[in-house]
Image 1 (cartoon, rainbow, N blue to C red):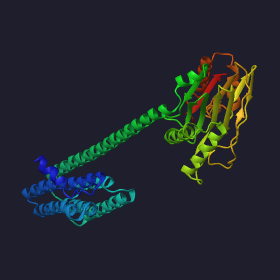
Image 2 (image 1 turned 90 degrees about the vertical axis):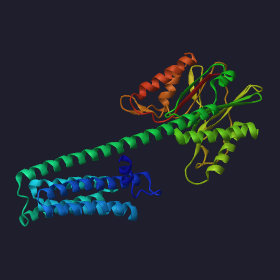
Image 3 (image 1 turned 90 degrees about the horizontal axis):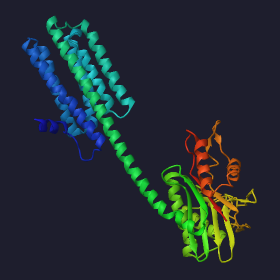
Image 4 (image 1 turned 180 degrees about the vertical axis):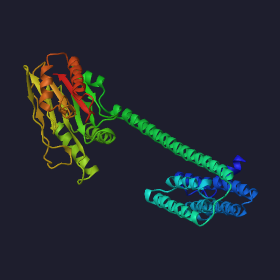
Length: 439
């Protein structure tokens, strides 16, 4: 019996339908199949009570509801839903007219109105169904004045109770359908979210293999710290390091965007930096940036969005005991003799920009125990504090100078604590990256 019922509910379901249309097709069939036994019950009830004309009207209702299955099978779901939206109100309107208000068949219009919200895509479509149903209801009520209702009060009370129970059951069915649809939608969303998060976490693993390992930095810079606080799981900011002979390179960069788009850009940026030094053997920092900019423009196009990165590429040449860097829209700061000094940079990105001048190779004249800091804009741009304002670069440099007498690990902790204290309950606006080192 159950298999036969499921088979009937699936009449008209086509392989070309998407899941939503399949569910709606089954719903239309379900409404029709619910109307058939109800009409049959009333046909028998009225026939046994001697109301043969009323019984014949319900026999017409059986035929009307059954035709819906044929409409679904031969003409498709869209035709079937229009048919049932017209046939059901007409059937209820006719029986309401001949039975009178005491029988309660007017409540059946609730059953015809509720499914319209489910089987039609937009408000305009189901509004037409609702207005049409209410018009038919109104005409049937006006018709009370011209057609005598059922005379037996006890009989009408029974019919009224049955109609009330039917409407309540139909309403519960619609609520359950809504609940099921919501649960299915929530499960789909949760499943997709899990898939996306799994993919992002895997992307993070890939990104972590490409950014500099702290142990590699420690091998080449004995006293240092890294503060890395991505806004999302993956980051547009990155720090990357490599070694070529006696030269150690360290990049601290901010790719266009953050999150997944920024992470993809960071992978591309790291690829071109690595290609320049380790494949093309371009060893001067300014020429490395020139090469990376050329490759980014070639691969991402000369027009449109200005993709690329701002950042600093530092080179420690142990053979020459020389410290050089190239900087794009980002200045390193150095603390020497207790004073903080902002070093120069080129006011253009590595990528598409208004200026495409060659990058400059800057030399850092430093003394032992001087402190050098490389950072991106995430900390300075963070909103927070009592007035919800940006932290700003001046305050960041003042904080760095204030903590400069501490051990670098303590400085790292102080910076992180200050960041979270400033941010408070506000959303983090960007990736945060700061690297400090003792020269």
